[in-house]
Length: 391
Image (cartoon, rainbow, N blue to C red):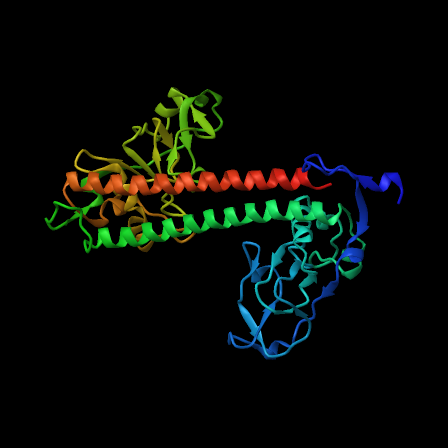
């Protein structure tokens, strides 16, 4: 084998120094292309054969049974490495079952090392460079068999596989913890808010209140975009697209000046007392404002009064959102007015109990965020290892 066909990875286990050898995927793995059964043989009966047709049947790197079939075309055994060959090309999964392969997938042997190598190839966009198709991207048997990769001797392959397998297990366990926390939070919210679960020392009935009795509802506005003196100032100015999964916001993409604020219907909203609440298509996306700011007219923000706890109300957002969507009106797009939002009724306890309930949900959300940060760190570590443990 020629010298230029050999390489070494950037990160290596002690005791290994030999160059990796360039091979074709078809030389080191048995490639089995899928063949779809007749659709008349598809079923929903788990007693039949699991059918894997493509990415829709893959979840978190594993086959996720969705469709079954009575017709066997091509079989991939339990533990097989599967590769999607139609858009999106390059998704990789393992199968915990014997499965029938549809034409959207191929089986690439059973090897752990190859599984991780294929994941790296996908992350690097390897298959996208090869995919063809006038209607959608795809790769064929030749593309797969001719794909070039560099491989070390078996002992090094096994060490790489073990460490990446361990990391995958840790990632999966962390994701499971997040899922469990989310389910616990959902169940806790339901039981606390229907009062079937009460905090110790509290027994008074909750009372119905209009949202407008608990908070001032404040709309926003946009300064003239043709006036440069209204823009690029020091005042944060939010658009609905900036409100997503974050609980807190403290810095907007665009800012306005004091003059821009004065010359528009935008108003300053107080920090730590305001829940930004989107009021147009995508109604009910919310975040707590931690720095004084203004918004455009796509919001009806909830400025909490002294008789309400901000995190208690923030924990009520799913309920408020549901009711707001039902009340929303509009021929072009749905919108909830400040007047309508203020009339939404919710059950609330006294302020002291609100505060304690708010702290319960705050602690749970903090724990979820902490676990999500851990998961993000593990995924970054995996990405770095995939980049440096392979050639």
